[in-house]
Length: 317
Image (tube, rainbow, N blue to C red; front, side):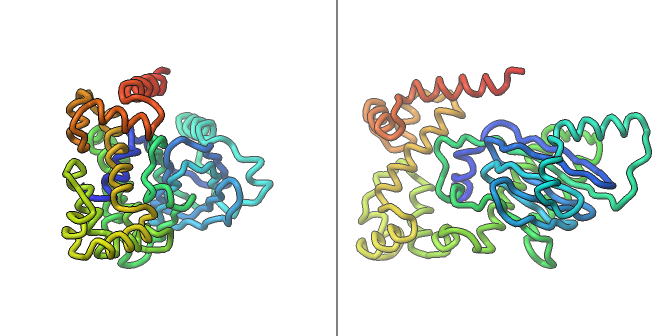
């Protein structure tokens, strides 16, 4: 595993959801704040997005993608939005139901330029967010520029085709393409290097080498000396550069990541505590439980039960 993959896997839960819509005329839809991440991809036409809590309206054109990694509530409309527009916005679910009803009744489409979009959400577990994900801005706008983000463009094209009709295997293909879309949106944001410190972290040969080693084998008997040798620098150099860029010393980061990874395993697997303890570098379940309780304020068993109960509550109609 690498840092970006681990950062996403630590928070992503359940199946993502998505919808393909086509609308014309004058329209405005509200997307409520969500305990996850939302996204929109414009396939045709233009529209505007205004995030809640301040911020400039964002003009979206064909081929643009926008990620709201913290589930920020927002409004999307056919034209530039203002306060009056926001107050009159209809919740997306209600607006979508009305739009489908009109389509079923074969009413003619409203006059005006058509807009076709992919809209969706990812469920995220925010109890232990990696700083790489935490530092992403409220709105990540990835404009469609010639030659920019080719993998993202390919994923958008594939997803648009799958959502365009009832194709065999779509039930498996669509959620996997949505996961791929999330990876490419986060990767594209990091490639642009316009936010936070993590583009610099991943671009630094010393810090990046140390992080790759820790994420590849968190259970190894790491020491500062061994990690410095892995990164090809002296121990003081590793400590200085890693701590400055990442925000905590290497061994402190390792402890944090081991327990974060353990929380993911508790949430997503039925592995016994002894097996999880070994996978994250603890010799005994007791030592693991003690460290986990110190970090999370609860035992591994209670943490697993709470996450299972929460997932059940989400699935209950």
